[in-house]
Image (cartoon, rainbow, N blue to C red):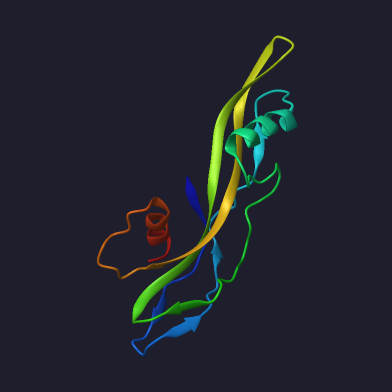
Length: 140
């Protein structure tokens, strides 16, 4: 699931041809990698299995999603009300860890694939992707 980590306020681009700009971003959420269970768990062993199954680019335990606070350079070709945002793919699953006849269940979470995006608030079609719907609800 992709989740928004930062978003700008609406930027109104006038109808005067191409315009390039950057935008201030405000934090929405931080996604941090962790292993959580109700009892003693070998967090590094649990996370190693999770990371192998999740695949390349997964953030290690304790690493928070990146913060930009400022967007990259954006160019808009026509009049529009736009919002820029940052997001990451959040990866989470349940686990059961067995050691010495004791089973402990919990959750392991991480993130990968940081992305930047821009959406048009005044577009005629409603957003079709979950992350863009979230951006629209947060900022438009």
